[in-house]
Length: 199
Image (cartoon, rainbow, N blue to C red; front, side, top):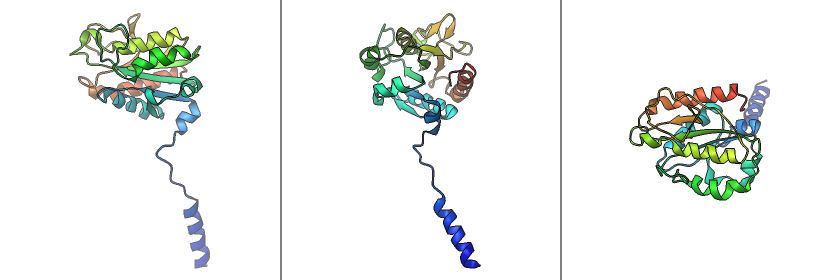
């Protein structure tokens, strides 16, 4: 009898498989992806909040292949603003080359896109999250459909190229001055995206 119980326990133990830390079940299920690039690490932190809220993995846009982008059902894309006042290449990251060298070659007609940005609304109040506006402009030029516009309430900036019709073109973060609101903003935005049919 003891031998039967021990054999059963050993068989059960051998059947257990520890989940991999790199498992991307949610990403694979939904066909959505998060791409960002960062200068100081703040945008990566915000991408992490969105990843946690959505169950998706976040990757640097510099590591994405064309097939990754065109094959995704939906893209969540985010950038910091580094080159304040610039008309193009505003992020100071991999996005600057990607938007002008890679994106023009891709067919993204009808692709679902959601945008987030990271900026400093006190030190750069006149340019808050301008690079998110550049992401919006470039993806829309390629025929993408943008989801997840948000209110500007609760922000303390003067101007932003990431605003269209009085709203932000996505979720904006400020890890310098409002870091305590970032996780909450990410969670609320992911909920909004689900309600809008992005996922």
